[in-house]
Length: 168
Image 1 (cartoon, rainbow, N blue to C red):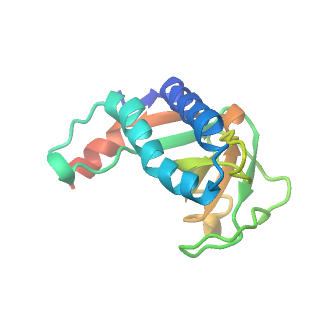
Image 2 (tube, rainbow, N blue to C red):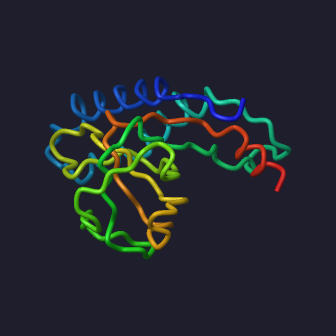
């Protein structure tokens, strides 16, 4: 099996994380402290609810195990927002292209995180924040960050890519 659909695992993590933030953290007086406190909790949730459910078959052990390769795949022709900046620090502008739609076979995206334009008071995780790995129609966008609506995509664990990473 090369690509395993893990959208259900991602949805469970998304719902758990959103609920935890929206009910227990977002109403705190010191929102900056709440955001700082929530970040490691969110990582633990992701590790437990998603990564803990994925199989690994490489040769690496312990801390040498590379993170799993998670692909975000548009379900159909879906609107994508591409960050203007190609450097390591992304800009706050997601308008590199106006009304650009991509299909499942036109682009290769790697999951980075969930994204909302506003973190406070409510987190919805409306978008997948992705890294563009391959985009033949626009090769100059490769390496940039992009946003794809969660409702327009599925997430797959690329087990074959994991095996290649683990033996490299």
